[in-house]
Image 1 (tube, helix red, strand yellow):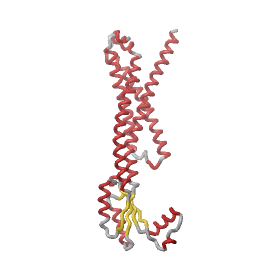
Image 2 (cartoon, one colour):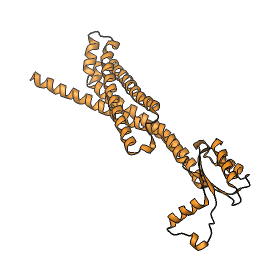
Image 3 (cartoon, helix red, strand yellow):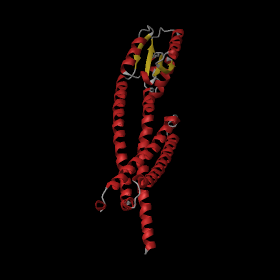
Image 4 (spheres, one colour):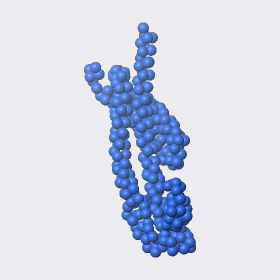
Length: 291
């Protein structure tokens, strides 16, 4: 009979530990995923900004030397990440490939112009910055026109600000939920041992002595849950890197390491604090209140 009861208690204890580790793992995995998204969101936003191109068209009177000089100036310009010179013949070929017909046979001459496609550095993809750059470029008398998607620039910057704000709100909300979930799981685990706590207190054990094994056990569970969360995050990172290499999600290993360290730190800190206060609560209860 005693053996059956001991087995039942052991199974219940294992089940309690499992639920605590599982809740810690799930919560920390979500927080870690959010952290990785945050550190990569700026890079993703910058990559998208740098794909927006400005096309500068030149008058037919512009000489090859003048076009080359403009290209050399772009290489030195702080706002230009890259530039591509497209001759009028190359532009005609591109248009022919797109429409599927050689439009030059109908027109008899090439109406297109030599141009430069300029990709900006992310910091300069702002409404005011691009407007200043455009004004500066138009001072060149050889330039006939400058074309870029102004609405897209405004839309990108406005949406990035909105997304950043919502990421901050969601981060705070998830952190709060994480603390509540882990705290609730640990409180239930301590609740099942409330009679043991009170018995130890009645035989003269100090509060710190009673608290220590419960806190240490919870911290070990927190470390286990955080370790599983880090393993899960590593698997997710390698999956994303394998299937979407253009994102270069593993490029900044230092920040990724900081996220992993933060996941481990949060797992230890929350379990330590939650267990400390949960144990303290039962230590302060009267024996009659335990029931």
